[in-house]
Length: 232
Image 1 (tube, rainbow, N blue to C red):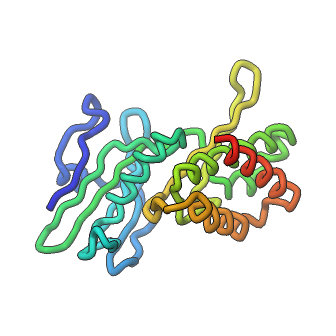
Image 2: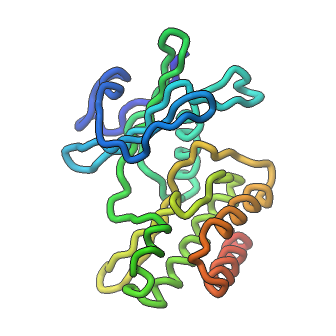
């Protein structure tokens, strides 16, 4: 069995699974053993936009539909496509495919770098909130609320809603500051039967793992989230 998508940028990149598998870069997430397999992420240099290559061997998930196991990057591909349709900013897929070699799965997910973005972790660790000021910080929280409300309104649960998987981009556009939010690392994402089920765990994860967000900021975020969820 082989599941794949075609290259999104054929004018820049061509080749088979083996060509992508042979490409090596700097490890930004060293291979670690999970789900009885290995998974890691490399940064690949390219002519223009840097790429990230998630490389997996025997890294599977199981479900009623796939009781024998399916590579987790294929589930992530499904989530990336679905979230893009919901209007949620996610990394652009360049290549995604999986194959079996001597009975063992190998899988690749290559995506474009989110240039200009920093993780929510880094946003708080740096001087960004102070440098951009209170109005932009408020805008960031409101954009985060809008992004997660779109995700959950579509009954999608991120599954790993940690600050390191939420990315922020702030910039001046025509003399006015703008903020954009993107989500990454969606290999544990799944669609739930109810909006509340999709929302509950993600918000709980975010609150527990983002202690830098003050009680006042959480109240602002949650108010904007509830309003956006009700309006959609």
